[in-house]
Amino acid sequence: MAGPKSTAAFERAKQVLPGGVNSPVRAFKSVHGTPFFAERGEGPYLYDIDGNRYVDYLMSWGPLIWGHAHPQIVSAVQEAAVKGTSFGVPTELETQVAEKIVELVPSIEVVRMVNSGTEATMSAVRLARAATKRSYVVKFIGCYHGHADHFLVKAGSGVADLGLPDSPGVPKETAERTIAVPYNDIDALRDVFLQRGEEIAAVIIEPVAGNMGCVLPKPGYLQAVRELTRSYETLLIFDEVITGFRVALGGAQARFGIEPDLTTFGKVIGAGLPVGAYGGRRDLMELIAPSGPVYQGGTLSGNPLAMSAGLVSLKMLEAADKTGFYDKLQAYGQQVVDAFVDHGKQHGIPTYGHALGGLFGLFFHDGPVHDFESARESDSAMYERFFHAMLDAGVTFAPSPLESAFVSGVHGDKELDITLSAISSVFRTLGA
Ligand SMILES: *Cc1c(COP(=O)(O)O)cnc(C)c1O
Image (tube, rainbow, N blue to C red; front, side, top):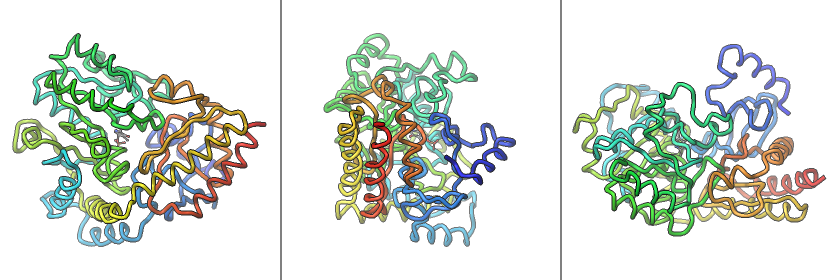
């Protein structure tokens, strides 16, 4: 239960913000709750305005791979702010961040910075359409790519939760150019290509799906998607807004050894500040204005505060990767998953989950979850009870069963202990 201050703050917010929030998932609707309001964060902990402390696995929905208010990131932002918050002319910082991304992500030769994941995916699709002179885009049911019109078709996450598979305000003509097929089903994709392969500009995919819970690609699936798109000269866009710098230093593409044509980023690259980016092969990226004709700009793109935070964070990740950073994150997540699954078994409650790098997923589901349909079969009422009981025990996950959980480099043994004992006591009440 949200405390009295959070409850009052939410009532006040609802007078002047739609639903009291600036992003729908924050309203706790899919767990039928009232959101707690953040007062501050510190490392792996989030504090609300009622004075409660939570071990945080929401991590601002992914960006905070170094936890809250990491001292090195805070000083980078402070130092940048003193020099000015935006200039409207280039800075060397932007080049440094771009060079770092190019160095770390195998398929990227040239990259453009934007302000959100939505902008990144929207711009990547525009570029793909311009490069191929084709108009159709294929996405996967349950994958979320931000809120641009052509992606609000069978999107997961907040969109699915609200039961708005096709949002009002999206023209039919736009939605018709988007073809949605089931995730992890190569035959379904092959059928779509047989029908109109020559008209498909791009296939956009979350290489590990993070917006229908965390769903892993089946072995060989991404490879098959790569081969199929290549054979039709359709561009493959990896939406690595969640997975970039989170499942491995080079993202999911490095982890699975696949080379997409274009990649989109967000979340982790800004370390908690508003950033997105898209990049890829030089010949494609050179089509972007001003080197080419495809227009895309941004008053605050490459913002010095965001670039400073991102650069420090990427350098820290690069250094940590040398001592097994991503394996440690995964081992942590796996322990939470194992505890969740084991206690489910003990109490006769169907549970399933997996961890990959700094990402993990918990499902109240009997057996594997490999697409949106199976994710939707999971017991959302049980998740709701689990979520609220864990909150009471001082641990926060995402306020929805169709989201991933995020671990940071500052979650340690102490937080793991708190989490595991909370899971143990919460399952005793769930079974009852
Ligand atoms: C969060 C997300 C986006 C949208 O990013 P915003 O910064 O919220 O606009 C796009 N794609 C994926 C995979 C995401 O998880």
